[in-house]
Image (cartoon, rainbow, N blue to C red; front, side, top):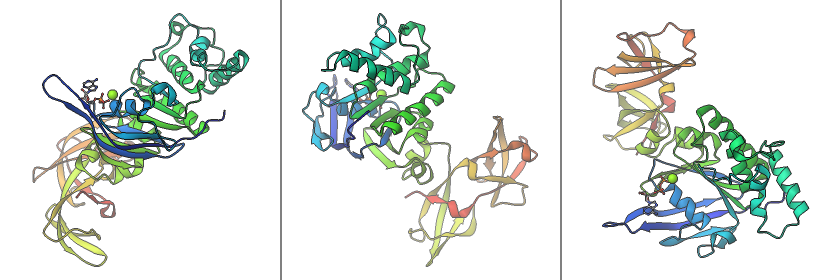
Length: 359
Ligand SMILES: Nc1ncnc2c1ncn2[C@@H]1O[C@H](COP(=O)(O)OP(=O)(O)O)[C@@H](O)[C@H]1O
Ligand SMILES: [Mg+2]
């Protein structure tokens, strides 16, 4: 299926909704460049402006200021039906009185496509999304996951240059959600179609995206690969939003040529050079899975286990340190070692090379 790969550029996009009383700045100066064939996810809490930004790409919402480019062309004033984008929503909005085949082919009716060609396209798309053999069913004879496949097929059949997803999996149960996100990614990659995906679910964002855009209050907080966003968050907000995290205060003692001497938990230690000045204190981001628990006399510091949650493949611990700090530790392969119990004192160790300091 020949789909023309298109870049998407948001250039200083602003959207203000005039409210009764005060205005809402839903999107506040968002600039973003998406490569042809790339899947970029807008991730952030409810109300941060994800849907509004996506709707401006589709043309359902007119920017207050700023521009949208698709394939290098300014489409800011182009109506939605001429932008060649397609959107998949959380609610499938299928026509209940039409069959699966008719639902998928619906968008082709308004295009100049011979009936036989249209029929062929529909069959091909049904195969691509895993609906072969279900063409004659009506939507109410399908499971939630199958209905979402129909919605996806309906978006794909018109061969859009950009595919837009607004929380498409929110109505599915956890297991199906994971399966479907894998399939969406597979299909998007196999067609090399540019996609903008909106979700508030960090796991979904991490697993599906080439790059993740973390949004907060209408603004971009950070753009990066899932690995970057997780391991090198720029802000406390990003660190917190994309997973469980410990924030550990680190005081800079002295910066040398290759190493920096710091104080952590009241102990002097050496870490790979960071470009902060002596006397400053920064928060280090340490993910719970990086903490290793050991007998109390080992490790950098010790703490009392205040909670222990067994989750099958992992055990989560909360530890209270004597200075009031709380740490969360995740241990994989819990059977490998005797567990710590609530009330036990455990030593805490982590790899100093991996310390990531926030500004
Ligand atoms: N049509 C609208 N009229 C007024 N306010 C709106 C409208 N659409 C969205 N908003 C407001 O804009 C902000 C961003 O909303 P939205 O883009 O839907 O966020 P998200 O998709 O991240 O949850 C919210 O404060 C929301 O209430
Ligand atoms: Mg939304």
